[in-house]
Image: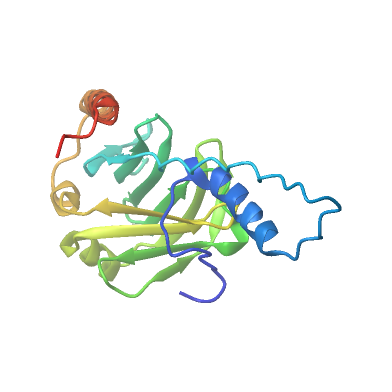
Length: 228
């Protein structure tokens, strides 16, 4: 990717721990600065910094195709092939949507949470392929979105690929990185669209699975380590 995007750390972090890490970075820089000699022999130990919390787990939906048409006879059908990742704590982490208007230009939209650095842009990678740079075009209440032209070549890579990596930079300068599975993309793209009722059922099922996963994780974290 061009130097326009500076991924400040090699670690891939979620937004949940950036504040703690920023505090640690500031305290580390202060610790390395020259220190004035104390006027008395008494020394005061610096306060312990809290350990950064683990980034929240992200659960990904399957790719889903939904199509709709306007009320007028002349209105053309538009299809949306979409997948999203959601933190176990509730907020949506990333959304990828291929938009196919009948007879018009196709677009691939990627959305990251609010708080990203807009000037740094976004990077998209399919498997181990060449990174694609994208600029944010709009921010709404659900996040900031970048658009990529959905060429036939890009769609074929999505259909045959295994993973879609979406990266950005958060407000503290840390890399955000999400890996969306592509195993179900081709089936959704070539298959029949789901109905609005089926879409709602899938959403409720996804929420239930996330709730169960979060509860299982809490139970596991609360258990004492096995005896050796």
